[in-house]
Amino acid sequence: MTTLRMTRELFNELQRDLRRMHPFASERVAFVQVHEGNRGGEHPLVLASASHSVTDDDYINDPLSGARINGTAIRAAMQRILDSGAGILHVHLHEHDDAPSFGRMDRREIPRLVKSFVATDARVPHGMLVLSNDSAHAWVAMPGQALRPVDKVVIVGRPMTIIGTNPAYRSARYDRQSFLGRHSQRAFESTRVGIAGLGGGGSHMAQQLAHLGFKDYVLFDKQRIEDSNLNRLVGGTENDVAGQAFKVDIAHRVICGIRSDAQVLPIRERWQDAAGALRSCDLVFGCVDGFDERRQLERSCRRYLIPLIDIGMDVQCVKGQLPRMAGQVILSTPGEPCMQCIGFLNEKTLTREAQRYGDAGDNPQVVWANGVLASTAIGIAVDLLTGWTGKHVGLEYLSYDGNRNCIGPHVRLEYLPKEQCTHHPLDQVGDPV
Amino acid sequence: MTLDPSQFAEILEICPAAREVKEGDATLVLLHDLRLPDGCQPATIRALLWPAARDGYSSRLFFSQRITPVAKANQQPLNWNANGVRILEENWHAFSWQTRGGQRLAQMIGQHLQALR
Image 1 (cartoon, one colour):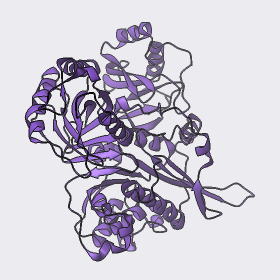
Image 2: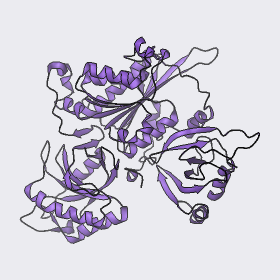
Image 3: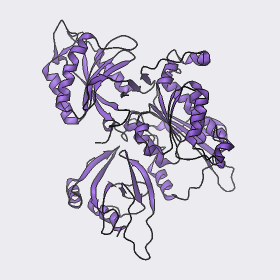
Image 4: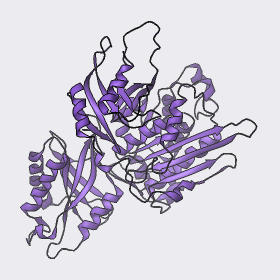
């Protein structure tokens, strides 16, 4: 199951480049730099980091071909492979809607080029990519393997596009959410969702995703349910407490009770100990404790071009004052500002957390606040995958005030840095070298 | 940002297989087969130097596994307060140990290893 991921920004940049008129060529060609991810795992990844144009002078006037490039352009691509240590995809555009495919000439000519890329450096993936107005299709030669079609292409951004082969579930079950768009059920069914933490927040999410029709889940939590979880863990029962059930197994049961054909991978470990499974997810929900774990999870998600939706809550109790309940929902999209850019993660809070290590106690948690935050996160995920609200921002930072029962954009969004995120450079995508 | 070559050369004297690596906007030093003080278990280890401020420490030295130092009378046990922390797609462990700021990279490593003596 090979997946190619690229950011929406890169997809748009490629389209702009490939649509430019050329003095005589009727099509254009570009190259995309790619990196291998999840090496040796069940779900290999090809992660795009940058695009490279072909200059006007490097096209050959050939009436039999839409776009024929010369040796200078090919040598430049090969040199880039050597300089960057990354692989290359040959890219062109078919200007129509829906899934594109390679034409007869593409299938005959481009693989020869890919062969020379493989000869330049066989340790990295190389291949060919064709874009349409709203979709993409790719063939990739992973290291040591033949050139073959990838199973899934994911355009990461807002909206997020998942191009796979999953046929949509047909039934009246989803009629009342058909306003989400004609491709919405296909998008939900093609998305592999990961939930890190199946406690108060994650258990709500698992249930709601199943109701929406999501079909492919990876659940991470090493904990078993305890009596003190029954105040909020959706689906948990006294019998589960008596049987010391794992939280992931409870979520598994809830999901399959709603959608019996769901594929659920319950992992009774921390997400850090099942890295390959996390990387295979197209979208991750973070329901983890603490700032440091959020920093780690965001870093891993950015490295593998996975959008992360984080939720969290806390109750501050100051002597002589009423308790203050607050929380956050953050959408962190690769290529967009991150949790450090928005100031949510900073050295001060991370230091404070590290200093109170071992003395943090149990954070207060309540079912309705978990529910508000989880539902909001699910709403963001649905919008990300369907684009039904027409929003295009890849960053969401919502602040929850539990005392006033309201949730809205965080004030920090008004003071966002103008520069691109430097905390997670795109050239570091893929497995560390 | 890259590390100062003269400082990196000093690290290579301690650990010939050391390598400069990037994680986000941080520049780190990956130390393959770092030799630990005599009597430690294991004797050599894969380690990662985070040479900048992190979690309230002026620098941190992470290890691929917990280390058992030489047992000594009246010695405080190490406070392993970073356990399975994900950096560079690996899980790392570190004990609480503050080093002086403004030191050269090799000195930083030496100061962290001092805790194991």
